[in-house]
Image (tube, rainbow, N blue to C red; front, side, top):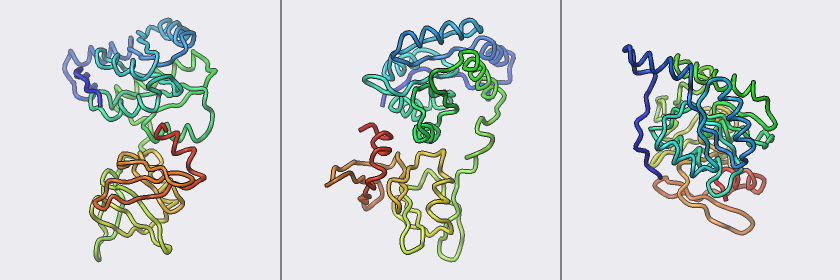
Length: 271
């Protein structure tokens, strides 16, 4: 991972006169990073946003975006998916995994119209998804809406995903397990199990119900009987006719990728 040296201002922390001035500046003249390998798209967005009083930075791919973020305070990121070298998915993962940039709102700006791409984007923490071609006035309004939401502390997902625990059975009790502790989830003999690094818990939900619950998290259903935490994949194995993943539980469990899920899986992990 690439480390960031920049310490960003968090608008929820400051209540002094200086903090309020910074909030006003962010809301009035925000800085937007546009990441796209098409110069004509970048310039069109730059013209539209600067006409609305915004400051625009640009990058031609995900690698350049990471470098820009390391040296500039950015309020919103407009991120394309298909780019050379470092694509949008890789850049997004880097942004979300770094504390200095994890809270920056991201609008995924792409020609991809498939529902799968939208679902993957939301799972990776994207706030909004805009397909090309788009209306620049609408895009500008979306940017300002995200900035206002961020400053005033509202959740752009309307509260969805705030409670990040799942009830599981432990002996004769029901306990709440943090989503971050889950390595994978499996279904067997009409029962559903949640697996952590060293334990297995029975849950009173179907795999489909849990899949819906984890829609905005970094989980993906790679097989009709398995949902995996994408951040807990240690290795991807090429097997006859497809793939299998090795996850980071104590036993380094091997989980097959179903044939019908291969395309979406490859797109998620970038292979």
